[in-house]
Image (cartoon, rainbow, N blue to C red; front, side, top):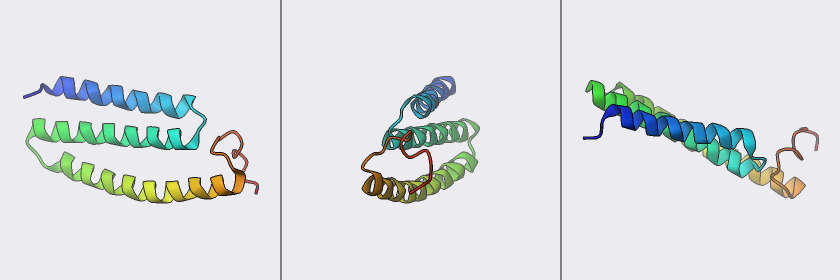
Length: 100
């Protein structure tokens, strides 16, 4: 059994890596992957706390977060592909203005 503190520390590190990726990177795909990393870090924390408290609430929340992440992946990738086809770049500085 891994102690809950270690699992939450890993979750915090993953979440921090995702935040840094969102703040530093300029590619829409990398930002998108960083957001997915943050959602997975939250899932890890939910499941770890649910296991520690012997309840199912955290696993139910993790299931809903996975559903939101899946829908976000479908819609987000479609938007990124549409922007890339229109502008030939995924750099967020070039598409910051929503002017076509």
